[in-house]
Length: 124
Image 1 (cartoon, rainbow, N blue to C red):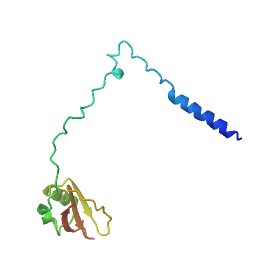
Image 2: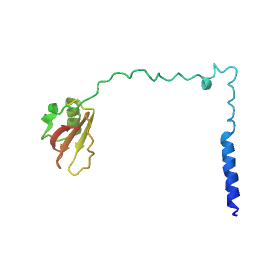
Image 3: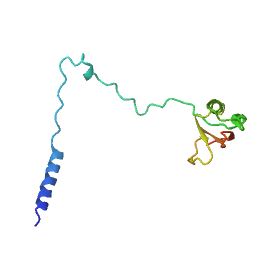
Image 4: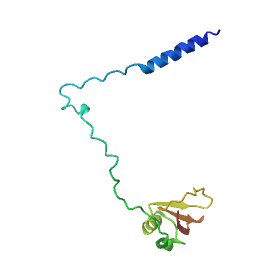
């Protein structure tokens, strides 16, 4: 019989007994705990059934941004098209750039050419 088997059994028994041990007791705060900020009570967590605040989701509408086709996509133009299309996000897609194919109704996609001219204004 190997020496490792009894040793591993003893180790497993020790771990099992340690899991059953009584956790250490917390110390009571001092008598003047109300004055001490480190012992101040935290506010209760919000109720789980409370309704979330109503927010109007931003939804992209590409029609108002079609004026940008043929324009140079600088920072000001991108911000204006984002505002005009009511988009929450903007993605400028350059030639050969890898992009995700996930659909986002709040995202504006501006496809540009090598000269940074806007080719298409679309959502997704």
